[in-house]
Image (tube, rainbow, N blue to C red; front, side):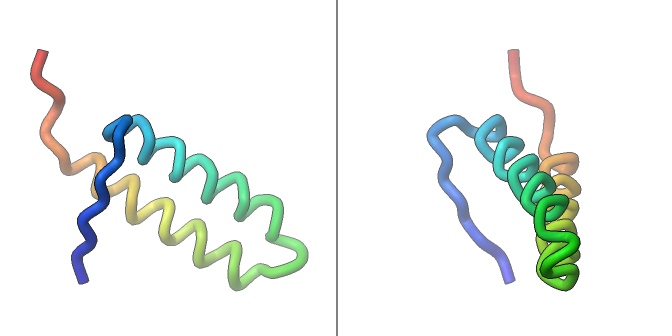
Length: 58
């Protein structure tokens, strides 16, 4: 499934979302390890997708 996400700050906003998912996963590891693993999987999938984008034009 594909998702179209419009962020006013562009990829910088998406990088913050990835960091938030990873931080949240660390915080939930003891209480909800399955949720933490899911958030890490999402963060890594988003990060991998960001790596596939062409570099910004200058």
